[in-house]
Image 1 (spheres, rainbow, N blue to C red):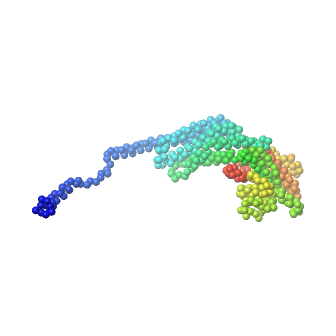
Image 2 (image 1 turned 45 degrees about the horizontal axis):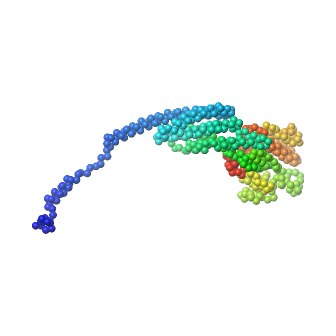
Image 3 (image 1 turned 45 degrees about the vertical axis):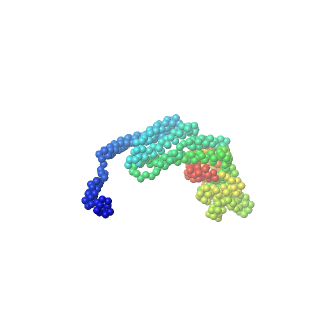
Length: 487
């Protein structure tokens, strides 16, 4: 009997151990590798998907290609209709213009409908084709908004467009009604939406585009920029002009006539000035002064000179609120206390602020802005009045005039002829004549007996050539003046 195990056995026999191990090996199945090969079913599904992708992509590509051709045709037709509308508007034939715009809207509706299809959205994900599709959709968006703006302007502004924005002056008062109507019309147009669509189209692109689409994108951007510039300027002016002409509260402006007799940074020496007052369109012009250069034989230290110092706006000291930077640059020229020298800085807001400070210092009267005008600019406005300018009889005799000065001779007369005819020894007569001619010129313009379209063109030309410059302390109005280049 063995120890340690009941039944006399102390552990398994060698045969049992061997047999147990053998049984374990037989019970454990052999390890297999995972089979990664696709089944026949999976391969079939993949082939079907690939086939659908190729066929579907081809169909979508063909559909979008046909739509692209149709959209191009619609855009070209809309462009032609818009040109017809433009010609009709030039002839003030609003019915014909509206008919052409209706046609343009139909063409644009077709282009928009096609470019909004689901197939176009899918096509944007395809290489090569996708960028072209996106650009065409953006072109359609810009063109559609531009057409909508034109249609809305004609449809809602028929009365205004039919009569034109006629700025009439009756008994010295500007009728602001057309400006208020134009303001409301422009506010109703989706100009900001057009700007957003233009910006989306203008986003730089690195993808390849066909030459036809690339050129169409460039042409559309150029046309959109022109339209937006015109609309923004119109909106800015429509918002600003009623306030500028005193629709909300009375306004007063320093009007300075710049002469090339002595050059200054803003254009010329301010040899003549007055105050333009407007109250809800009612215009008054007065308080004129002229610059006397002290060229007579009087004692320069006598009372005559003292009297003239007040007349030309030469203050005994600088205004208390003058900009220290302005004084640091131009104080040695007495610019801050002398109207003839005050416009030595080319920046109009800087010069205008100094003018307003000096005027208030001299008169205890704060004005609302500054208007600077020179001889060529004033002549253009005078020519729009279709009336010759009355001149003093003694001047008419010297220059062999029939008591009037033809407006097309105004600039050369006040800058050259009068100095040749009335030289140093006739300075008093010359200054008196220039002041009277200046008064007559401004009164003739502000009298308002002119064709509004001709006057508008004269003002625009004078502004573009810097013959007319305007500054106002009203920030919103000043921003509008900046937009049209008048500041």
